[in-house]
Figure (cartoon, each protein chain N blue to C red):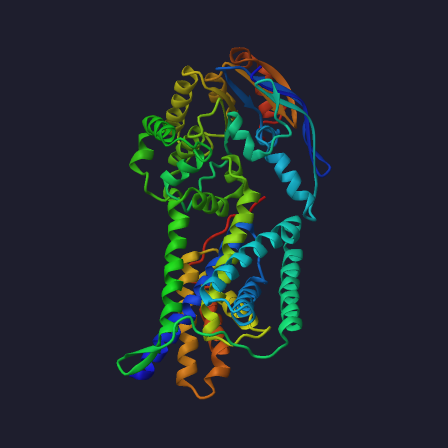
Length: 291
Length: 255
């Protein structure tokens, strides 16, 4: 029984982080047509920002988190403006450029912090016992804030004018353009918001994870798997698939020996099986070819 | 003229899609632009609304193809051929595009709201929405339905309604009759007549010359990128040459 609860807690946390990453990745893909391989690298940068602020500058973790998110947003918009916008119509170049950005971030972090495993203190200490299982308050905080941010994102997309601009640009950027929406500006704003979300994911997960310059690679693979499993371009699909992957990962870790080493392969295996049955993913959307 | 196109030419790679076209629309006129498939009618509308120039910019950053644009377009006395596509609406020109292109996964009301994107004043938006609902009551009934599930005729009404939400001075319409039942076409043209009587200028692109010219004040006939006939709707309807342009000289299978 206690193991079930462990799996539930870890599955929910992992799932929420993957959901945040996958949804923000899908936003960039949908609106700006950019496959952002560097997505989780921004997540790593945010984590290191928090480490720097708390460890070297002696800041409280909350302002450190906020600054990390702001830095992510700015970095995202600058990257878009300087690197991605000029090559946006060239899919291959975008893929290579975003991969390069990720590697650059990784090497800068290695230079600055070496490859040592670091950690960031919890935002809140202590734990509560649910049915005899210890659940750390930090875990609940991470989970709660992820859910709150996802709700805010949905409200933003469906209740605001900018959200309307994002959704219509994702559907048909040419017609959005006709209606007076500056498609290129919307793409940059989307990049800022989405990278901000990736930074937020990094910020809330960092107390639970080990900080090191390669920490972006596994989440990248899992995030891409979630996006593909859920159906490219479907936010709902990303959301559902994120929890499927999160729970799979948690189950493998707790149920099988050496689970920590197998978690990713099992999760990816599930993705492959689903895709064999349903190639468009769980909530696949039909994308109209542009001319 | 309110909208004036002067000596416009457009090349996609080596292909010349529009060849030195000059035409115009006056205040309160319904002008029909007719001609067979591939005559360059849609490209002309896309040029006027800035989409060709936008596409040209995109192509500069990609590896496939290039677009060349020449000529001058003025609207209300000001040149608009260098105005970016997303600024054209602000000037009072809007296009209801070919194949209607609703935002398929969005509701009818959301589609209409995108049409009113540049309008800040909520009361104005409400007023425009009332007007669109009055012209097309079916859109009101279906306002919370996802637009991809509408019938072809309803999607066309949505495309026109979405364009009207911006309160345009000139409405450009690309093939509103495409694939629709005669009864639905009649309903849509009925609305166009009504709008024209209220003073809206309309530039209509159609393959079906008979329908288009019957509702128009004036018309232009295009063929292979050129304007080959111009005149009042009556003149063009009576012109045997226009028939021939459609059916092609001697062989009657194309067009």
